[in-house]
Amino acid sequence: MLLIKNVLLPDFDTLTTAPADLLIENGRFAAIAPQLSAQCETLDAHGMLALPGMADIHTHMVQSLTKGPLDDMNITQWLQKMLAAQWSLTADEWYYGVLLGCLQSLRYGVTAVNEMTYFPHIDAVVQAYQDAGLRVTFGIGATDIAENDQIKVTSVDECLRQAEYLYDRWHGKGLLRTAAVPQGRPACTPELMVALKQFARERGLVYHTHLAEGKAETERVRQWTGRGEAEELAHLGVLDENTILAHSIWLSDSEIDLLAQTKAVVAHCPSTNMKLSDGAPRIAQMLNAGVRVGFGCDGEASSANRDLLREARHGSYLQKVLTLDPTVLPAGQCYRMLTETGMAALGYRDLGKIAVGYQADFSLVRTDDLSTVNHRRILTNLLYAGSGSQVASVFVRGRRVVRNGRFTEHDVGRVLEQCERILAKLEARM
Image (cartoon, rainbow, N blue to C red; front, side, top):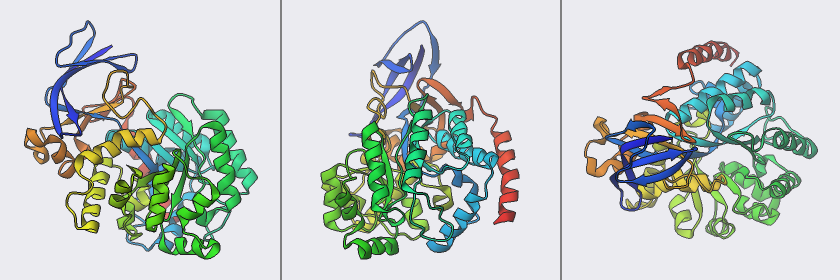
């Protein structure tokens, strides 16, 4: 058992906080009250905000190694160079790239991620997930159409074999879940999109894909099919409440309504969309239509970012500019998207809230930072002026994995040393 005293508990509806004590037992919140007592380990969290664990619902972890060298490129050049660098990585390099990304996510209070990865060196990738100690939903980014000469094409049968391999070996093991993950309709035949959806439905898995990220790619799908990308996915029957759609930029009004009707989830990745000049998805309109939306940091090769709080700030500001309406995507809605919505999208029914019976995934956030002065406005100031670097401690299933900004089970200096060694070789190759 662990008793946390004097924490500030958030209310995302009123954007206020109230002092409370939290009792954690067997990895869950056992009691929450203004004052609790118990004969167990006790932590005084006076002045700390308790924030539910956040979910990053679209990411590519290994791209932590390609943050920087690919800056300020157009999407075509960026994609070719990113893939060429990625395919050159050894198993050891994959391990450290993924571990680096996972540790950054944890450091910023993210306790669950939805990862699109690749089959080469998959054992090293999964070892990095396990060593990092956060929840990971993951699948192989499957493709059977070559969009450029760096794309590795895989047959439908082989894509299914790889998905089955992941499912049999790792699904439900510890903090891991597997998913069915076609890259997206521009890179996948209808046969592959449908086959992986059937695979996911038979096993109750998340189906995770890109949607309408690039204008040219979206137009290509329309030329092939006579339909927009979302219309095409609806036509193929792959949209439902277990479908996560990264980006979702180039959509018509009727396609937004389709996403609402099918209960599919959009993963909003504003930093990538801005940095690569992909365009701005109409998230405010989606939310008004009833579309479920969460946030994703995407890969650092494009977003340069693993601070999901900053991602939410970018997302909120981008919608305010796009609509010329300062009231859209307010702070409370952002927090729910970061926590409850994101966790529900990944299939977790007992995460995303600090509530009795829920699993104890949460962070303790410092409120004594200069950027978050004014304790009557902690939540709005954290989102709009603060950062994930104010996260002091992170708990997964009630176990503290970050204490006072330092990992309890990782020598970060050693990880960074290994990554710098890898990066020197990688930049020379690039």
